[in-house]
Image 1: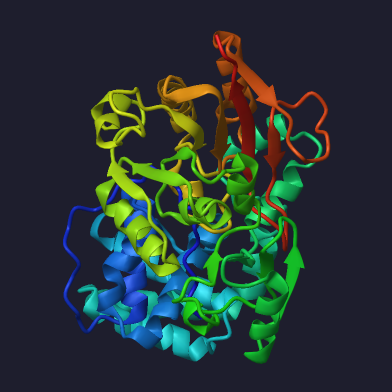
Image 2: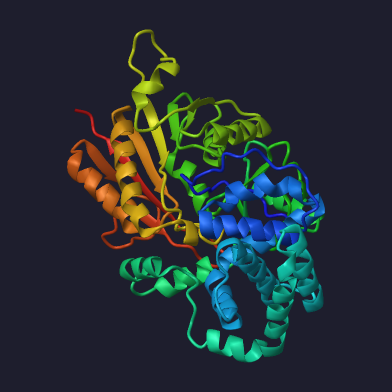
Length: 462
């Protein structure tokens, strides 16, 4: 089924500049092979590629395209090892598309209920659309051999526990979480649960659960309030009154952002790095009379913010701007009093990050992210923190958030900020103590929330 859009998106992933392709006769498997090639060889994101290629398949086939692409990225190392055992030599150059076609077919054979003969036949037929028809015999032979020798091949490949993560990330997780790094990896390798946030301006959680039950959709409640987890994920079109703004798809731990910010009516609030707008709409659910500014550096992503606000029947000022350069966009915000300097009562900084806490929702992150990115992202976060801190009122509150589980982006980032800003005070959060941990780190948990970090800072008056 169609994977519902989630409000937590990895940031700073390069987009393709091409226009959406026209409809073609390519099969789902052929399109999937092209997408996986772009992920693996060109480091492009599924979040960009899937919408870009959606028009190339029939609407009823798009869920299958999603399932294949997300699934291959989730278990890529295992598939690569199986394929290496089947090939006499690697497929390189123009034959890389065959390599990716074989990967997606192995995924179907190992992880889906598609009959083996159908999967193999579709792969062979896909070679024509991919313009590698002369190699259809190679594809057929490799896949038939796998079906014959599957048991010994898998026994060799699965001899040792597979992390399905790049080595650098495994090492980082071991260092940061010496006692539970395996639990984090296991959670990352699961399909994510589908969480809903009920709009309290429209309905109570209990009443919405009843509406879901009437549609045959099972759910369970959790904290924070308004959070519901679906027993089985579904398309958003099946959710009662979704188009009328009664509910939003948002991860459990992401739902803490607006609640920890604690917005109040009448306040001027900045939601920095706001796209796609889930946290913006949550702020306005909790404080409908607040003046909210939704800022993001990418204009195309702000369209999602505008769409979400419209669906929820809410209003906010949407600005395209660089959070490290407030002087370039602050003039667009009208001060309450004439000639007074604009400063915010509260700032939610959902900082650009490695997205290592949401890998199960975006498994391509494992192959897009590089270890060198972490230091670059931490430097960017520090620049944004410093720039926005100057625009916060005395006694104002800044909530720092990431969807990362790596200390350089989280606890170490805030520790360094506190060391250099004597006017910053760390406020307590309503969670169980994590020892001397600065802020609070959620780690991804099976059937629970994703990996998120929060730190709440108050600006002391001079």
